[in-house]
Each structure stands twice: as C-alpha cells, then as structure tokens.
Length: 90
Image (tube, rainbow, N blue to C red):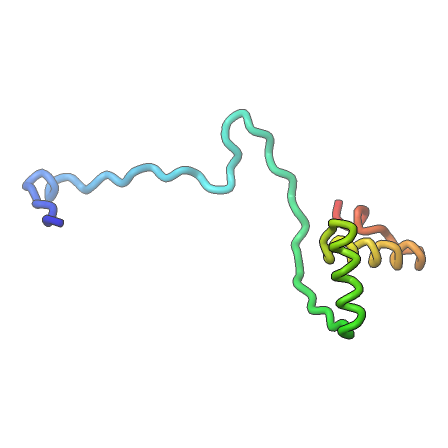
C-alpha cells in the first residue's frame, strides 16, 4: 500500500476528524431503553445425579437449566415470604 503523500495544505490546516456517532444514545424517534439489572455470575456445585436429573428434565421440557433453577429460587423466595424475582428485577 503506497504511503499517503503530504501536501503543503496538510501542514497549514489541521486534519479534520470525522464526527463519531454518539454512543449509548437512542436514535431519533427511538424509545429510550429501560435499565436492565446488573447480572452477577454464580457458581453452583451439584452432585452428579442431581445435575443429570436437571439436564434430562430441561431437555424433556425443552427449557434451559437456568430457567428451571430460577423457577426453583422463585418458589423458595415466595415460600419464605420474600419478594419474587420479578419484583426484585423491576
């Protein structure tokens, strides 16, 4: 690729930088995005038989293991009189 040649004009006038698109701003006419809750990764250690049963159940119900675990947490929260996951993430 050949080098760009300098001209006398390029020394007199500073180069013009292209205007960058504003980040994190909705496009004109677009609604502003709602804030999403921050997500924290959590490691879960399961006995092999429990993991296998969860995996099979998720496959049979055509759901994700994560969704089944979240449903279980929601039931535990409700059983203990705590806020549901939906209430916590709004």
